Image (tube, rainbow, N blue to C red):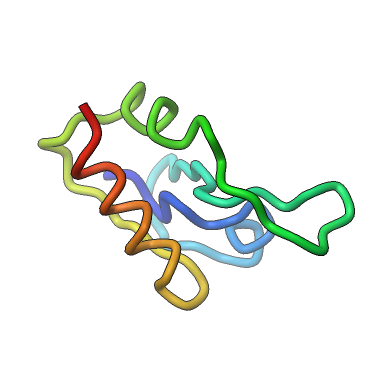
Length: 78
């Protein structure tokens, strides 16, 4: 199981599902100015390097919007 696949690093540090060896691959990254978030261009590559499409994942974020984008992206990844 991969926990909280798309949370920002700050969200992940504030708390996540209690599993052994949780993994976080942020879907969005904060810019250095922290005023804007940008899509992690390596999200699919990083996620698919540690899991397969057959794995059960727990995907979460603060409001659920990034989770939907992350799941959609992974489902359509080649």
